[in-house]
Length: 305
Image (tube, rainbow, N blue to C red; front, side):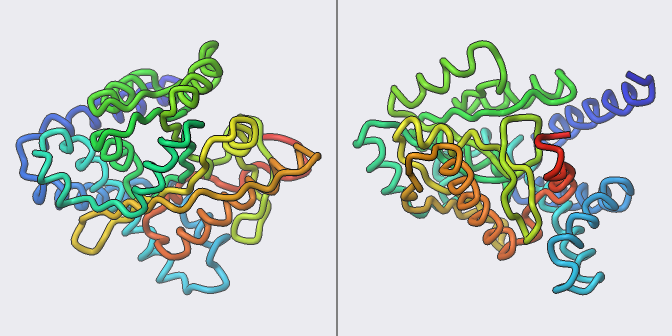
């Protein structure tokens, strides 16, 4: 690893921990406002990430939205990420009645029904809104939640995030670890909830499905688990509202495509999950993480780069 990359990572970790320390004394309202300011600063400072994000926005909306609107969407996306960071840092400081007033949940009855059925629950979402806040809010509401996540590029940041999730009783299952398969199956056997984010091009088993009319390499694990386990499989999103409150929307369990051709079923169901994520992004484009290179892997390469 180049020294410059090490320095950048150390700076990011130092900045993250400093922001966490300095914003904890702030009220929720002023902390969120400060987060928006931090996001705006990063929008102007991180030229490379801004250019990468604009590339993705042009792929998705280039023919439908003018360049000026794409920049507006992107700036607000950065602001929302800044707000989200402060929110998850300070969420544990709120009283139960405060957190309930900030976050409403729609479709909670589907979680309760799945809990009674006894095959466990798979919640599928993407990097939309404050997904970490959604996990924390559901867990604090009494739903045992476990999330599958790949270790981050910097072990210090990864440990910080895992420790932070554990504050809200959200267990992180490290994808690819020797015990991950056993833990995943154990979650569903215990009738608990498994959360997966499937909207990024990562080095996992996946399939190519349409995403904004362009083939995108997409993790197939959610479809594989849903088909093999019989768990109730639902899409779930958190949306930032104009007043910086949040709405968690849990959708009706999906009827999976099932046939004698398993690989085809995995592809069809992954495409369905991805289509629903795309619909939500179209509705709230400033709430997705555009800096990820979603279409980096090309179909002819038969796997991730």
